[in-house]
Amino acid sequence: MKKLSVVLLFICFVVTSGIQANAAKGDTLVHEVHKKYGEFLIFDNSDVNDSERERVLVTYTIKDDKLTKPKIKTHQAKYQKMAKDKKTHNKLWKQFANMIPKKNRQEITQFQVFTDGHDELLAYVLPLNYSISNWALAVDYKDSIANKNMYYSTLVHEYGHILMYKQKQWNRMFSPFCSNYVSLGKCSNKNSRANQFYEEFWAGVLAKDWKTMRIDGEVDYEFYDLYEADFVTFYAMTDPDEDFAETFEYFLFTKEPTKTKKGKYKNLADAKLGFFFEDPQMLKLREKMLKNLLKHY
Image (cartoon, rainbow, N blue to C red; front, side):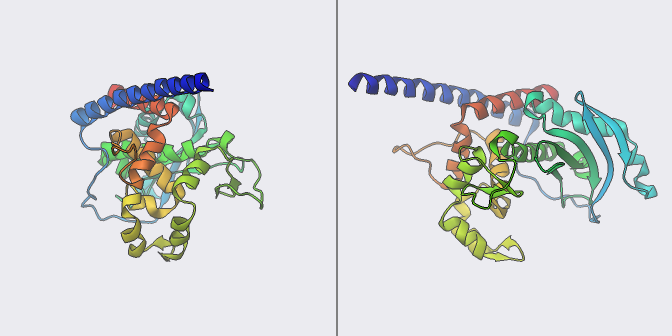
């Protein structure tokens, strides 16, 4: 037993050291990105007041990593020029495609360009089939063009949703007896990132308070006051899905949080970041995405 314990301790030390090394390498890249291109997480709203009903202008099918089969979705004259502006659409798609490694985004099979005016809704992803194997990425061209850094950070957030819904981590059919995290009518697998994230950071008292402290479907400030230190942003309080995506966004653009002398994170928000920093696959993905951003910005 002693030999086994020693071996296990040695293995744990090697793995942990490797994780720290990868995190440090990524942290260096984060510093380079911020030094070269500026802030990616904090933005002011634009001064343009042109809010309107959301309108999809054009959709594309993604084939061989290229935009194909454009379908104009609006007949309004003022949008025809942008709806047919393939050069801008390709640029917006490439900013996403160049940052996210191809093998990590096979689920994205459709690209949409929409607008609801400046600010408001920046981008979103939505499943195109019940099995959640195919997804569309939709971007607001006004916001995307107005602030490049905000566009990149938004793309990272939206990719966080795709990451959460990787098909192998979910059961194809919803079971009414599912005891794991449920979303989009699907039951997550026990060992999926979605379920682990929910069980570690939401299950229990927080989830109960989240359900009761809501006004018109949104969390109220009483919930915010109670749990401010548990989330990276106010928007992350929306639901577990948004919390996962927001935390992934901060994981990419911030340095690894420090722990106390007892080896614990100072708050739950840092622990959520640690959820990603302690995952070797996520560290590798972070490093690739940051390198790609530096190369293709």
